[in-house]
Image (tube, rainbow, N blue to C red; front, side, top):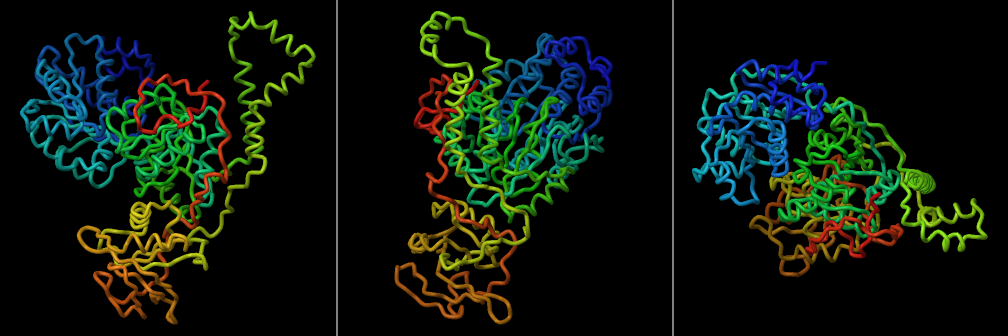
Length: 626
């Protein structure tokens, strides 16, 4: 492997590298830096998150720009505020000995006037989010007509976040003879389109295979009933006492809900999603980076830009709609040469999606079992023993030893040790001694094992694929508007102009009452009770058991003859589509497996007393930080 000196970097940059403690270049740095230093050409670099891409384009840019000029010569676009600030800070650290260097970060949520003032002072390099950059260009607060180098960092994520139009507008205002360097973890069609439009015969380098996960991350999955998903998450946390993790959920609501549950159960957790203000996001991220928060529950969009090297685990509490997103999630761990674990909690109906992910990341998932109660008790006991063994003695305790010794004068060494460890061990033992086995035996995972029962209500709804729904989007829509748990809506079957779904009968009145007079995108959504029984030809026909009109009256629908609204047409149900939701009702009873009370309070010392309930439990308990 080369050294940074052999790559051709100048003395000022080498001194900065030494201060940062870098020893040898990463693979992407070793491949990209010589090309960017010695050639004036466009580059597409495909490398997983956490492989050192910032330095791969940062060092060449700093060496090639004219620091004596106040003209903006380098533009770096990144998807999020957090990543924008991180890149800007790293560029400043790389150019610590480059006298006169001015790197300015431009992002939303901060004063545009202050940022414009910094640019006017003479910014050779601007690091920006696309939205704020486009805004400043339209206000003529920044001039990018003379830039020589444009970098699209995490290009796939920027396009996933809807920045394609902004990126196109920004690059259209830059010189045609500039060099464009595109860095991305994956290469979807949208990224290829941008590359084709704005780059001239780019050279492509790839670290590993396209979309492949790094070798420093192991991939595990745990098969449980959908209703046991949260209990499985808690056991995985308890089985890893030193966990420092990001937990991914699909929606903002689920993110907030899981974080609140963890906090109430005594864990040091926080939520990161789009409904938080910028100040709240900053507080959560500050606590996470300092490890005052050990379990950060996040949506995919909010987590973009999280760059923390010491994350031990990524837990996929729910898989994303987009299979490629898994690459970005797992890339949050196993960074900077460290190893990490990516865990996926799945129900039987979701297992088949792992096969698709395996093909993309070119890695196999290992099926593991959720640990049982006694295994967790053993892990916790030995973790405590090791921490006590390695604890440095605080001699301020010496003045109390006489009283302590008198108290335990008649206690033997073995008995004292047992008493001491029982304080911690007994809590876990009492909690887990009668706990059930959460693991599900792998079997036929192509269909849901749960069939409609006498306790389930089947509904017809007059929206379908023409309204932009598939089974997963419709399920999320229903649980959102009805305020139900993810697993309270099941057997979702989405047709072209109508759909079917199930809930338990206890929710029937709530469902029908809600949709009495409900509009979606300007038209009424009608929901009626149906049996959806299979006909002689093997296809189901919606035989109504009596629906409810928008005016609250009762009506009969026989044999699908009444074709209301866009739900018209023969209401037939072919075999329910695969993947029609999770197969079990969510366990709504919080007392079914309650968390034992944590004995130590949070050490976060956070002085912000804001009302949002994302980083502190109501009771003040917190997972202790040792």
